[in-house]
Image (cartoon, rainbow, N blue to C red):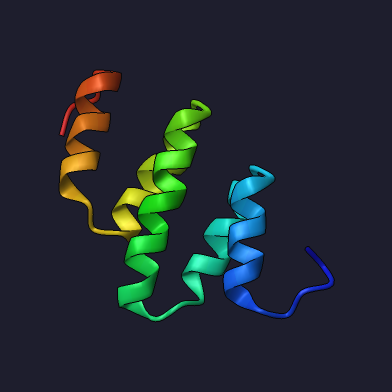
Length: 79
């Protein structure tokens, strides 16, 4: 991952290696539209590995209200 300079390639590698914190850092540097779609991808992957706090942060970054609501309902959190 340290060899490549392409942000898209780094993002894909970090998802494949489940380095979700690095993937989120890459998403934060992207333009808003691209960051939303990739943020959702990181959030979905975070849910798959039971990282609810990270998933919540990613879904908020992606403005994915449906996923945020589902996460809140699943964890029993109140608005």
